[in-house]
Amino acid sequence: MKEIIQSRAFRLQTPSSDELDGIVDKIVHRCAGSPLAAKAFGSMLSTRPTVNEWMDILAKSNICNDRTGILPVLKLRYDDLPPHMKQCFAFCAIFPKDYEIDVEHLIHLWMALDFVPLEEEDHPETAGEEIFRQLTWRSFFQEVKESPPAMYQKWGGMLFNRTTCKIHDLMHDIALSVMGNDCLTVTDRTNDKKSIRSNSSHLLVMPCWNTVGWFYEETTFNAPDTVLYRC
Image (cartoon, rainbow, N blue to C red):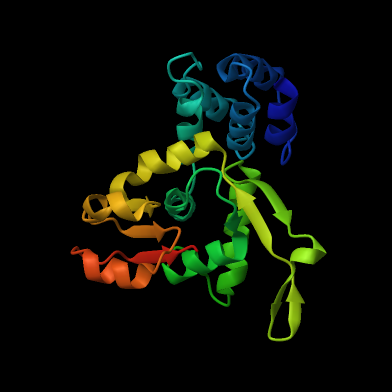
């Protein structure tokens, strides 16, 4: 665990005192043997150069136990994100657990929902890609991979790789805890009329069994901001 924390914490800086190394030993105890928790701590510490800042992280964290697991550590990591990254990651609660997410499609959704802040001359897609890269480094996304040649997609006569990722189940729990009823995944046509009336902001319908007709004919609610169909 200590090696994982140090490899991330000192990625952008070098240890400035033996006291920092002592804090790492205490943080290792907080992780309770979880590599995911160690990565979360390490990435939080990487942008904090002073002993006081490291002590502040230590003070805010709780020791992982059988009741809470590592969720408090992961929630602390989420709370440490800039506001726009919080928004981008929390939106991913719309996807089911273990869902293979198309990264390009995800970034385009962020852009469409105005989640990607832009500076002058920024290209929206490039800014979205940087948000995804930062969240991946912080372990909010995992299993990032490009499709093999046999699965290339053809678009406009050109061949493109398809990059996908997944979210660790515990990170997905964090997204769900943040979003509450704002994100809803509909997986069974027979039992979701009531849940759809909950005024969710973002809705994923899968599979899409003539979804468009069913969705608009048999539901009465304020239309969500986002409706995705996955057949």
